[in-house]
Image (cartoon, rainbow, N blue to C red; front, side):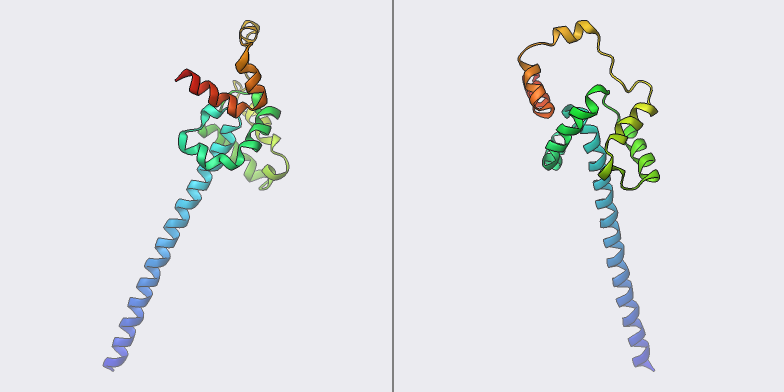
Length: 156
């Protein structure tokens, strides 16, 4: 009888240890999911402006700069930079209606953002456009991300 009790106690201790390990794994998975969601939102925000990225974000998103540049040139350059909350709201709405929209129709992000926020579209005065001619403009047309980085470096 004592041996049975000892065996049951060992089983309970083993189960408790397994539960603790599972809880630690679950906590780690939740943190990883949160990190990935944050990177996804920062990726979409970065397509509007490289200035939207922090120093750590450059390293995390370095593999995606070509895609960021392409999306900026095609869709985002005419729009104001959204907040991370606005990005999150647009992503949530698009994900709920079509889980794989970003693989097949990334332009939906920009059209949804522009439709959801009345002040999303840039309105650049003609005088400002005329005053922005010069060397930096030619650099930014080559790569908006690199151009923005050069501007940041020159302003500091």
